[in-house]
Image: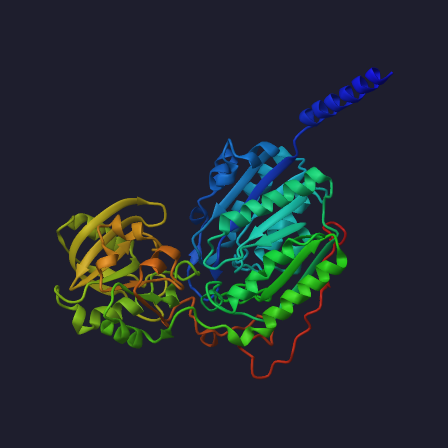
Length: 519
């Protein structure tokens, strides 16, 4: 009698495995639009800036989605559109509506879906529309319905409105600034989605959302230093608790004037008590250290920064030209700083201190540089086409040192030697974050006395290279002196703008309904 029983058990085991192996894979869509856009910049962002990927091209945005990657094999992936733009001014309504329509059309074509990965930044501003990401996800829900499990990944400088929180099921964001964990975060969002689908757990029962009335620039909230370092160190242990799916702190985006622009804490999970307690713990921890946040590097006027740079015995010395930082939403063509630099006597002679300036966009000047050729003389004005509020176009008279074609953002780059300054001019604005951004143009930043970059905190490669660094409080669409911006629509009171009169805010849990329960 024992042998037939064993045979039956073995048969059942083999059959169950065969059934599991032949069970249909979950159908998962991928969509998202990402940009950080300043409403204090006169610039406007058009559709081409998003460099949208369609269909199978979307996989190329994610290393963990390559053909042989384990996650790729765990679902039937149905990518719609993913578009990522360099930060800039508000997106035109026409560009937004066009990209949203294309996304919705694609989603309709391949529906239904078991899940969707929603990949956004969270700080997109659109002309005439509040809360674009919330609007976008609501319109996606109108197409794919509420049975689909949606997992959202975001930048920690994004904004989480209640509408966005209500229409997603799983949500996570970066835990590092600079964002060295960006791809890890995206992979976590996908892994969470697959786990909830495969386990049958589906939508977490509880979503705690707590607005924290703090609005600070990223340059004051870096996780490289305290208190950001210790604050964000609390997130992973909380997220790893049984009964919790994920936890996150959003610093928010400081250069847009909308009601949703403020910090947020959010925790999702199945254990109501743990979800609430954890969210309130993180929110209180954030509020308690609000007065400790400071710039990640010494900060002063451009004049003071230059004085320190000229005295420094070690090089290269970096100065962040923060007010027009194109990776925070600046127009990128403010000429105030380069005008000040070229007016200084020490940089007027060819044998003066070696200075690299990155960068100023001007397509007409690029045409002149191309016409002159490498080694030729060029004379013309550059910049201040989009944002001329602080200085007019700058006159550049010098020698063309290099011309490079093909950059994804700049398209064409030229280096012009003006006195002892190597000025990078681009056809379109571009951030300079890596050593190769300079060396491919023939520049040697490690040997320069001074490198001035339109940036906030230095990205890892430049940070590792610098032997001295200050951040200059320069003007522009992402001015770090928030009191100069003139907010009219953010919720008040807000720290630090109203620090002197603020009372302790209500940091108790706001429960966000499971998606579909309250539309």
